[in-house]
Image (cartoon, rainbow, N blue to C red; front, side, top):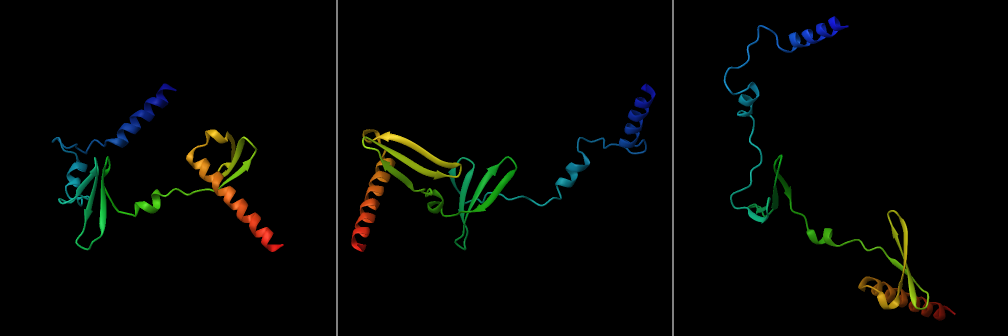
Length: 149
């Protein structure tokens, strides 16, 4: 068994580094000489405004705004998008049930329906707004039903 392993290791060494091939004697390797002929990557323009550390904004002569991020893999260039649309969170409707001194809230989430109960005196701003909105919808719906009769 030892002879088999010795033969495999010797064969791997012989295949990996043939005897007739010489390694470069200088400190540079063959791949480092090829890098000099490679095209240059993206660079941050001289007139770019720094927004935060590692993030720069630059407006081209055509009026297009580009963002440059300095990453561990080099500079990344991407077009600036309107932040207002992305910043607005998607509001999911909250259903409210009045239980007397408490309210029961229901909201549909990607993981299923979530329910919670709170006293009317301990509501947050969002919960108060949802309660007023549901009370307004209930009174409007009741008014529409009375109008149909």
